[in-house]
Each structure stands twice: as structure tokens, then as C-alpha cells.
Amino acid sequence: MLSLENAREILFKYLNEFLISHKKAETVPLWEAGGRVMAVDIAADEDIPAFNRSHVDGYALLSGDTCNGAADHPITLKIIDTIAAGSYSTKKLLPGTAMKIFTGAPPPREADCIIKKEETVEINRDSGPAVIIKRFVSAGENISLKGEDIRDGDFLFSRGTILSFPQIETLAILGIDPVSVFAKPRIGIFSTGNELVDLHDHLQYGQLRASNLYTLAEIIRQAGGNPVNLGVVRDRIEDVLQVYEKAKQLNLPIVISTGGTASGDLDFIKDAMEQTLSTRLFNKVAIRPGAPFVASVKENQLLIGLSGNPGGAIVALLFLLFPMISQLEGTKRELSPGQGRLTAPITRKGGLRGFFWGCYDELGGHKYVTPFENQFCGAIRTHIAGNCLIEIPAGKVNLTVDDNVVIWKLP
Image 1 (cartoon, rainbow, N blue to C red):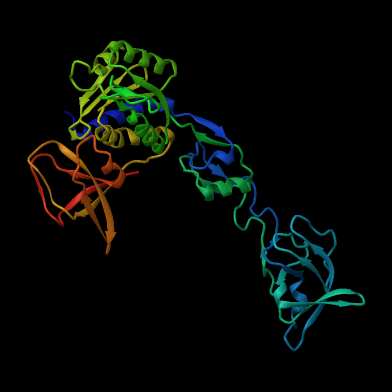
Image 2: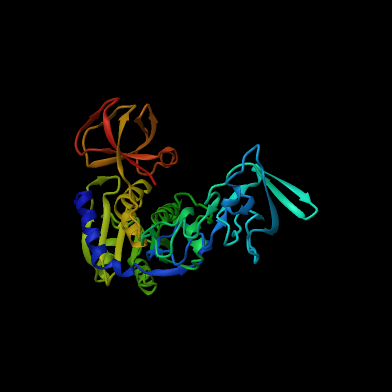
């Protein structure tokens, strides 16, 4: 058996040598780009704001006109125009005059300041409207200058950036649509087993719904992949070979199966891989659950066989394939370790390095983690309640309350 770290190293070596050719870019509408990964660097190709603009409702004027302005010495300026957002004035601002202006509108070229409406009094005179100002207004007040936020040529964010609302906002302001993003890698997935039926079929005694397909597909999506459902396959080598041929025709870089990886009479995944003339990378990984992990390569395609037990398939996929799929999408998502204090003891007579389902909470700056009682591979309730995996060292284990353990937060 390979260690988890050695298995990961082998898979990533393959990723860097072969699968990287599947890392492709595509263009998508900005409206649909949230959560995708940029395939190019982004630099501004215009100034933001694109023109000097008011960031208040008020009056644009010449600061020199207000040099003597005070509460006991008000200045009165004639209003010669009104500028709304989306428009501009063609008039020239002369000394002794002002223009009414609204937020976002460009001030007249001659104006060097804007005073807030709340600080003024507008009056009507026989000669027309005017504004009374009772203080000195300094140059630059309430004007956002062209390029003050972003200048033409500024580097904004790099290839590999996950697009969230700040990046979407920036791209929209710059008018960049569509955008170049990494294509989500298409990952084939199928389940083997004569006992498995489709979710919509009526269950006969002894049959199970093919739930692993849906579970593993969602993990693939969270990693940034696009799962391709290759269906449920009977326990016949001919049927498995047909699925591998279909995956080849679809040009899927990774094909994942669940079930049929042990050494029983009806476990055909290893034999099917050999008949495709693939090269075996390894057969097992020294972890529980998830030890039956078969990996082979064939014509720039990675064939993976996971345990049919839900817990084992999930754990193996999370630790070994989740980060690979993420890198194919252009990111580096993976489970990261932390420390937690046990709230209940864990004992074990021996065995491989293990991962128990648990739930952690933070209290007083510390993480406290509770392992669940049911740790067999087919347990489902532990998956519902859990938010982490607790790592258990190989061999005999006798952990007590408040012992520190490594925990892996689930995605």
C-alpha cells in the first residue's frame, strides 16, 4: 500500500506531465462568470472615473468666489445651469456664477470645487435663481478626479483569480464582457454493482439506489469540475469496457468509478483497466476508509477506481482527486489541516491511518471536536452532521478527552 502522501505525489506528477494539456480557456458572458477562474491577467484599459465627477448633490463653482464667505458675510452666486448625471453643460462657468449639479455628473471645466446642497440656500431673484454660500469652499472639495480610482494601464488582478463580486464589479465597470476563464474539467463518473438501481426505479429486496454517483458528482463540482454521468454499470467486464470506450470518445481527462475495486469474483475494475492497455500507477492507499483506490493511465487519460462504500469513496476523492480537479480548473482548492481538542475518547486496537467523521466548534479561541460513534463506511447520518474529518494515526490508538488531533475541514 502507498501512503496518502506518496499516492498524491504520483497523481500530481501525472497531472503536471499529461493532464495539464486539458487545462483550457473559454469565454463566458460576464453575467454567468461568478465563481469561475480567470484565464488571463486583467489590466485597466481606461480611467475610472472616466471624467471628473461630483460625488454630492450641490453647486459647482470657483473657489476664488468664496474667499470672503462666512456666516456673517454670505456670498451669492447666480445659477446659470443645471447638470444631471448622464449629461454635461456646454456653458462656461464665469466668476460670480455657479451651476447646480447632481451626484455623478461632470462639473464644468472651469469649476474647481463643489459645495453640498445642505450647506447652501437657493433663492429666486428677478434675474433668476441664485445660491447663498456662507463659508469658504476650498479647491478640490467634493470632486472625484478622472483616474482617481483606477488609471488606464493599472494591473488589477491575475490569471487564476476566482471571480467574486468585487472582480465582477470591476469587469463590469470596465465593460469587459465576455471574459476568458478556465474551462471546468469534464470528469466522467460511473458506479458498478448488480445491486444498484437508478434513483427513480422501484427498489426490490436487496437493491440499493446509486447514491454514490450524486455524492461524488457534487464533490467534483465543489472542486471546480463538471461531472459527466456515465451511469450504473453491471458487474460484467464487457460493460465496464464499454463505459471506458465511451469516456474515450467523450475525451474525458479523468474517469472515476465507484465499486468493483476489491478482489472478489465480481470486482472487474482492475481487469477492465488492464484490458484497455492502461499502465497501473497503484492499487491501494494506506488509509481507512478509502484503501481500495486503483489508478491507471491510458492515452492521456486517468482511470480511477474508488471503493463502493460511500465513506471510503468520499474520503479518497476528497484527499486525492479534489485538489487535482481544482488545479485543472485553475485554482488550488484542497482540504487544509487544523488542530482540535477531543470532547470524547477514541480507542482502536490497530489498523491503517484513519479518518473519522466529526463535528467541531470554536470556543474561547480553541476548536473542540466531537467524533461520531458510527464510523462504518456505509453510515450516512455522520455525513449529514459532520463538518470535518478527524485524522487517526496508524496502529493502536488510545486518545482521551482534551487530546489534540488533526482535523480536516470539509468543503
